[in-house]
Image (cartoon, rainbow, N blue to C red; front, side, top):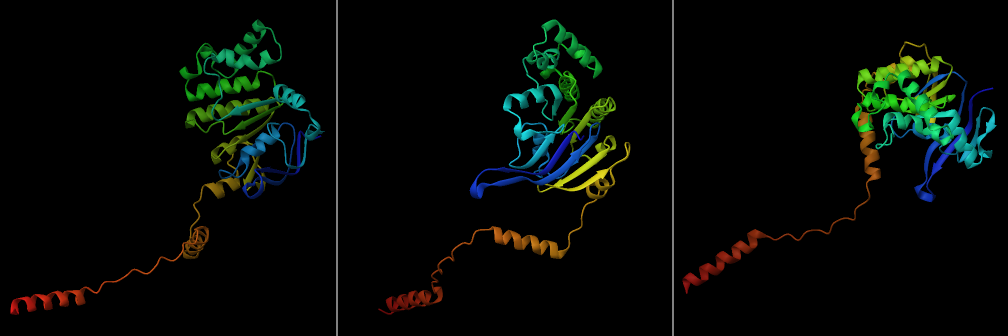
Length: 292
């Protein structure tokens, strides 16, 4: 039984003429234990897809089954419990509470489960040690570097031992060394049997994935199995090369732009003054005055 099954899933936002199609009949199956990278240009629906899989949003059309159970039948309380116990979220902006220490931020999900304070602090400390920042457990988020803050976010996502990890641009705000640290942590999590789905714009990070999904305009246009340690072939082809544009492409772009611009009413013709005629009249008048 697949962990995630989406069948012709679409997501619409807005009403009437303001309707936006974020997902367009997406069909995908993700098995347990996969490490999936989702790639595509900004606005193509990557984050919407992750929100759908993580039960943060529901499809407008189509069917979504999580561990064989239809999501449409889940009540809000049951969906919230699944998110708390079975899904770990890692965000680009960290989303750490600024007035809580790293230890308290990691222990927070355990508090929602009713775990006693001493036990949840001990578990949180062990999780921080696992991601390599236990020596920063009493630091506030503002006192941490970007890589350290993201490690704390990963520890918080793992503290409930979730089966599914969803990471939306987990390295978007990090330098290359911190990005590699975060991806190695996610790789270790995957090796322990967890399913990891992450969004990225960096083709180099596909080295860690076992599968790469490419999206465009709300649809999945390519689904590629990859070898760990190698950059996905499609990512290398699409993102490492700059497409050359021809004169026909430029003219097509101008044509589209002209169609997008609103039509302006023609401006009324300007009145022209014949300067030469008025000049002659002035000279004639001066001549008459001198004669008299």
